Image 1: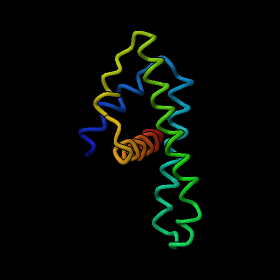
Image 2: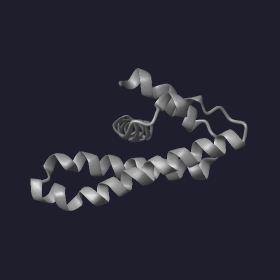
Image 3: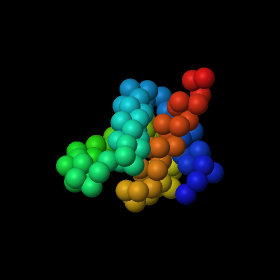
Length: 108
């Protein structure tokens, strides 16, 4: 998966009229991305200690994405992006990292 795969998905999410739910996903994506990036610097013991919290955050991130897609569908907005993204946890985590990067870059 790369930017060409994730960018159209981000654009679909970014264009929703459901700003509160979108922004909730964005905030969780940022938190998850920081947690995932910090994983590079943790010892084995620290990883074991923080693994449950990381998993809970990942689950919450996925839940927020599903809630957003469900509500976008109810609002008549396109949600094909959610099917394209799929259910693979690692891919969803990668998407969160790309979202965080794009959010940061567009604020310069």
